[in-house]
Length: 171
Image (cartoon, rainbow, N blue to C red; front, side, top):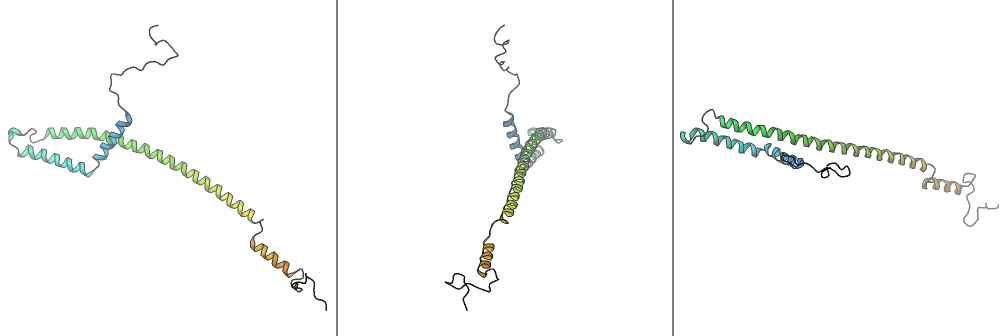
């Protein structure tokens, strides 16, 4: 065996491709920047000025300086070329935005599920606290009990005198 081509304990060396290599993420970001520019009023203004100058030059310039006479075939070719490149770049930018939206939507859905679970947990906790609070002596309940004790077992007819230790006065 020649070289490491037959060894199974080592990965094969990466083959060099005759095609140019590019970073898909960098290409995608560049396409988004171009698509954002193509969707602006500034681009439309520049393109309008470019086409107007092209037409004016090829109509008003001396015949020997005109490079694209009346049917403006070269201008049509230039605009077609621009459209043929911009359309796929815009689509690529839209696909990337749709992917980001999908990821954000999934994160929002998971966050909503967590919020719902937290809300349900807190609702159960509040219900348990309310149930437990029914078994706890509250301030109002204690006041009522103390008032009942002060009145005595006969409904307050024989109220204790201060210092009398609860005895009724002898007649």
